[in-house]
Image 1 (cartoon, rainbow, N blue to C red):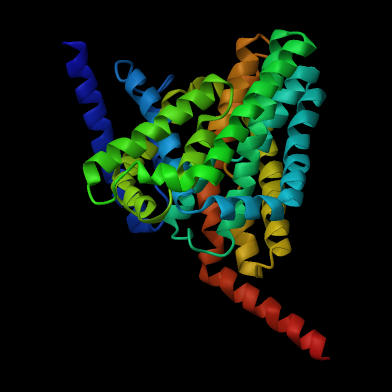
Image 2 (image 1 turned 120 degrees about the horizontal axis):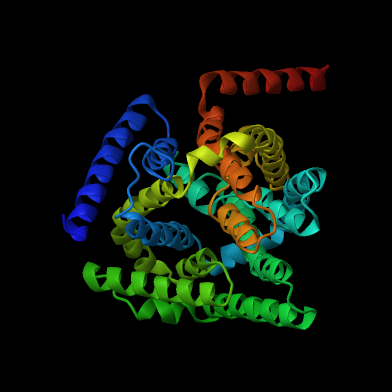
Length: 397
């Protein structure tokens, strides 16, 4: 059978199955993300029927999915709102790094993997998955919630921090000189600063390039600019997600609203592909040996993420339900964690780091969407009301 025909059959069958699972998820009232991941595991490396022919399609599609998720999040906010949120969340970003990077570094040292592996595993546990969190916020209808800008600010701080972290890690694993590492970091930071400056100063002019009245050229133009900037950012060791997010920030007004409308169906398609590819790229047979330490690390660092979001929301004046929503929304890890682990393993640092990171990410990304729904449950709301009533009673007494 011709390879193109096999790709069509594999992709078509997988998309049809995902559609049915998506309907099931909506019927039982949960996010479809865990189902997409499990589909990828079933048909990936070590699965029942490996889908080899369509692997390249899903790999490229997954990258486009992350880019679109972050671009459309950027369209929801202006550059001024972004800077304001970043300034207000500086302390939260610092707490986030300490609370969540430290457990990974400590575990690597306890396992005897050495300091470079400790730096790598610290990054794996530090950064939440922007793609997963963005989809959860949309699925749960929380984009307009008061705590959402705080959650996004923490995600952006993490993604921007990767502009510093990834070049440093790359320098460590390949053993380059201090000067070479410094040059790489300087280039990455300069690109981020340049994109942010253009978004702030010339955003209104960028919007004038496009027309809101004609959907087809608007779709092609915004998608093309987003992918172009994301690719340039990735080429200089800056996250493509950061580049896509800043493009979304730069586009404003009616153009931003219309671009969001025409890009939403594409985002939904490629975001689903991203989560399936994550499962396809995972060898389920390698997870067993590191499942226990991965589970323990996941439990600890999901708790520290909840603490990070809760404290950040409290500093922002958000009520108790919003604090819990912020914290629980940050628990999934994803694309960055896998990239970091792959970078370390490819350099021969520690082969066991890959299955540990994969098991860790899968646990957080499957459990995270369920945890994020807890504040919407009836028993949680009743407990919050009871606690608030008790506090009010004590204050009056």
